[in-house]
Image (cartoon, rainbow, N blue to C red; front, side, top):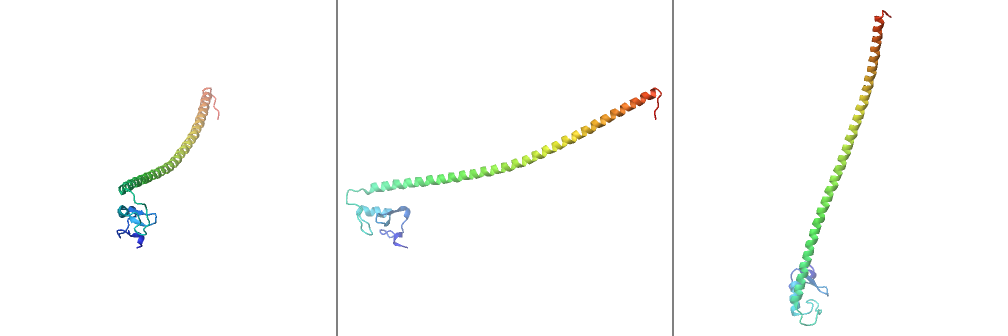
Length: 163
């Protein structure tokens, strides 16, 4: 463990979320550092002077620091909410893409089924036309036969018999 990891004032491990980095690059627990600053205006390690003795109010600095901590916490919560919303939007987008893909596949299947039905109908219409033509031919043939029988009947009525 290096000396940067230990507060020079309390000799405990430093929680970097609640730490202070001085202008002379020394880390301290923020509570230790501000208590030190109430008594002395220099760095506990190198004795660099931070300010001249004045009517400096450490409580004002603590309030400012506390307010900044609240703001950081609020922004952190906001970032987490935005990440969650982004994740939900990504999930919804992926669900919609999957649904569109499935719909596209269903459309292809339905188009194939439709084309098969159209082909079957065309085939049935073609067969119907063929059967109708055959029926028409049969009907014409029967009419000719009937006409032939009628003529033959007339010939017999007149005593004509052709063999």
